[in-house]
Amino acid sequence: MTKGKAKAAVLTTAFVVTGNLIGAGILALPIKTGLAGLAPSILAMVGVWALMLSTALILANQKSLTQGKNADLPTFFEEQLGHAGKWAAVIGNMVLLYGIMVAYLSGGSAILESVLGNHVPRPLLIVAFFIPVTTVALFGMTVIRRGNAVLVLAMWLAFGTLVAMGLEHMDPARLAHVDWGFLPAALPIMVTSFHFHNIIPSLCRSMDFDQRSIRRAIVLGTLIGLAMNTVWVLVAMGAIPVDGLGDRTLTYAFEHDLPATVPMAGMIGSGVFSAAALVFAFVAISTSYMTNGLALSSFLGDLVRLPGTKGRISAACLSFLPPLCVTVIDPDLFLKALDLVGGVGINLIFGILPGVVAFKQARGRARPAALVLILAFGLLLAFELGQETGLLRNPSVGHWKATISH
Image (cartoon, rainbow, N blue to C red; front, top):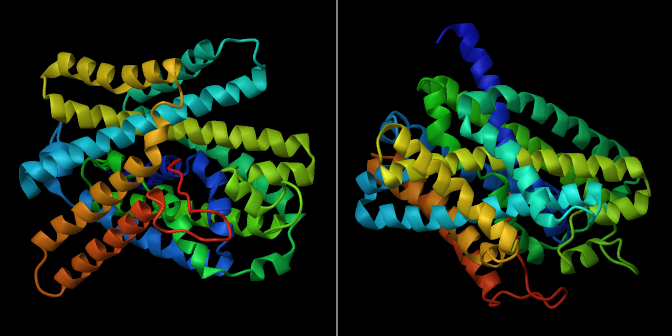
């Protein structure tokens, strides 16, 4: 790869990483973090970003995962951790990715319904969203990488509009609120906000296994995501009061699982703001759906292991048709399991297991660092399980909730 091509590949691949990790869940991030306050939330986000970046670089550095034509997580974890590691990855990743695909199909069709009204049957809207985004995903990482820059630009323009209009309603005094007791409630959604690890095998192959360029693209893409998350949390926390009467508070939005754009739209009262929120959510959902769909297809291709065209067709059908059917039948059927299984899946597959691999491969002083990764993700997993089972509660706002929405 020439120097010029390498620089272009780094930039376009970084946009793919950003588009994958900035899902529509960013709109809900200030609500999940808001009750803890700005300072605890920013510190925690930087920490979670560093943890997720570390495991991403660990996976990207594994030749057996990234350089095989069809290699993916099942083969890799079987080689590194035996059959138990393989099937932990298979079960957790399939549930996670299928759930995310259903969530995005449901969310994308809901946005179309909000624009077109309820005159068009919901199943037709689901199919109308499904066909174009699935078609792009089927063309592979090269096509996604080239077209993704346009979508990311549209996402930034919409995001910039939301931020600019939100800044006009900020009250700096609101940023002084601090309640560390609510911070664990925000940790699971922070983990999902920096999750893009499924696409690493496809990403590495599309960059001709240029390790230096791959690392740069991953770091740049996640840094852009960290900056967007930080700016949005800052603006939303400054614009929305923590509590008070009515439905335009962080507390009300937290209790009712509303994105930050809902109370902000009520306060701003502008059709431009509402339109920008719709565009941002739609583009974020579309880019994440395409990259996660490609990751699922690669994952299942490694699992099925059929040669040539037959294998690609089988992987594509297994990747895209089940989520479509589930969404048409009942958009909420699969989502009910996402809070628990999705959060557990990310922490296990892309947190603890890469840490175990790093510990196994490390020598000398690198081993304590790998052990820190395992312990940190183990703690995040414990918080997730505690919240979902109701063992962790805060008397102020019911029991902590965590929504897996990437």
